[in-house]
Each structure stands twice: as C-alpha cells, then as structure tokens.
Image (cartoon, rainbow, N blue to C red; front, side, top):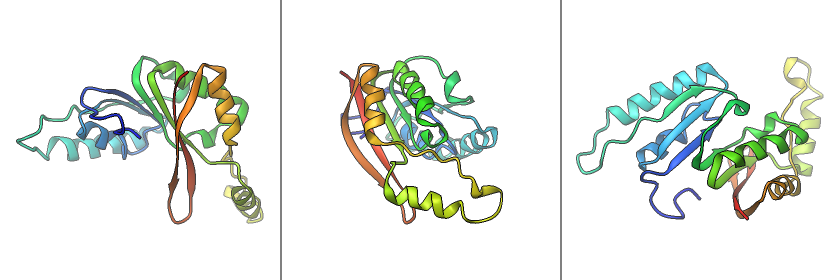
Length: 185
C-alpha cells in the first residue's frame, strides 16, 4: 500500500508504534522522511541501533544516502505534527473500542493524505482464542488484546471525514490482522 502511489522519496511518514523499526528502516531506505515513535524505550533503542547498522553502514554508490529516521519515546496520544502518511500497525489491540475511536481520530488529524492501520479483527476465531487463553493459569491469562470490528473502525474514520480506500490482510502462521488504508473523504 505504501508504494502503490509511486516513490516514497521525500514523503513524510509517521510510524506510530514503531517497535524495533521493522517498517521505519525499510521506509527510510526507500527515501521516506520517517518520524518513528514507540512507548517502549527499549524498543526505540533497538530500532535506533538497527537503523544505524542498516542505514549508515550499507552505502550504495548509485542511490542517495537514506535519511536516518527520527526515533522518539512517546505514547500515541502525545504524537503531533503533520505527515503525508501516518502508519499505525498492530497497536489498536491496546485500546478498547471507545478509546480506539479517539485514537483513530487523533491519528487521522496528523495525516494529510492517508492513514494506514492494522487491527486484530473481532472474529469468532479470535474470540475463541481469547476465551481458551483465559483458561490457563498465570499472569498472562487476562489478555488485554482488544479486538475491533471492521465496521467500528470504518465508523470511527467516517466520523472524522475519512473513508477506507483499500483493505488487506497481514498473516503469519499464528496471527492475522486486518489492514486498511484510509484517505480523506
């Protein structure tokens, strides 16, 4: 979705909830100007370390040097600025729907052209997995991974004047999440 519109050269991107930089670093390699944040200082430190290793040590004589992403320790609520694109992958699992609505509105307010979100969809499969997980003893039994119905995410976007342009699915062996690209209406 990020390169469907063409080159990322000079495109400003906010990677909200960047983790260890697995999206920020490839975006910078593509020429994007990346602002990346995560609530975890350890994740941000690892992202910076990996970015230095990958971006500053691998020089390609034919391509311009990538701009190092600006990494910050911040929660989503503290993000500010304006970006061509805001990306927030697999972070909405930490927000119940009433708070997710406000977060979607906030992220949309930061984006000029598009917002790319992924979320754990509220499906029978995931609901069953959560219930099975709650049967096991231990501190992790009360999972706080919030599931979101696609209709609720779409409603939150419409409320702030955005619409879904594209949909996709992110899958691994044990996990899948819904991916959407939203644009101003």
